[in-house]
Image (cartoon, rainbow, N blue to C red; front, side, top):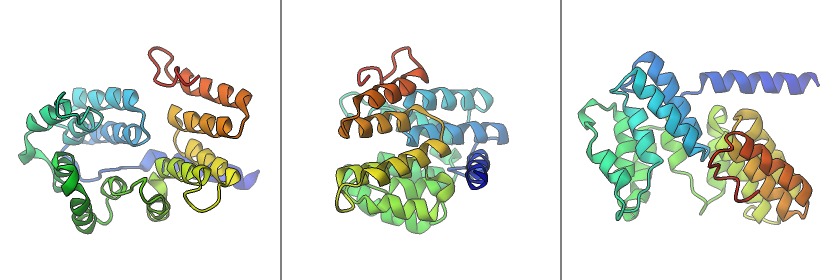
Length: 232
């Protein structure tokens, strides 16, 4: 019990101090909110990310990483042009070098992204955000490497690791390890996506009662127009 309480306290402290981008163009208060927006976005919780990013812009209208987060969660479909439009409207001269790296990555074509990832990771080896965008479901080990190198920021990585174990990406399917890592993700970040993931795991195990109960926990984070409702 004592070890569990210590772990939870450590997770809480890490979340409070987690800064995905430390060198930002935002003022001090907006930086904290914008980094929370990035945390939501990388945990695939786009509606909270939208709210947090816009809140950061209310504090500081020139907060670059808040604008970048809004571009990141927008569609990259060229026929819609939402992300491209947001990036085009951005004054890149006001971005820090780390923010500009994220901007360049989102602006790059699919063919150029892979080589750009390596270049950006080499340039910003200590940047959690830059290193996380270089992870890929084509290589589930990349999430383990990220979790090891950036434990403070690894909630989303642990969620992805759980899928790796559940789908057999690490060898044989391992339900115990899958549930272990999705629970770690929940302990580090209190949001709906990890509950959605856990519900999927329960469903794949044939435990539909717990799948529904867990899915409804994801819905409960914001029931109106919840993207998790259709799975429930």
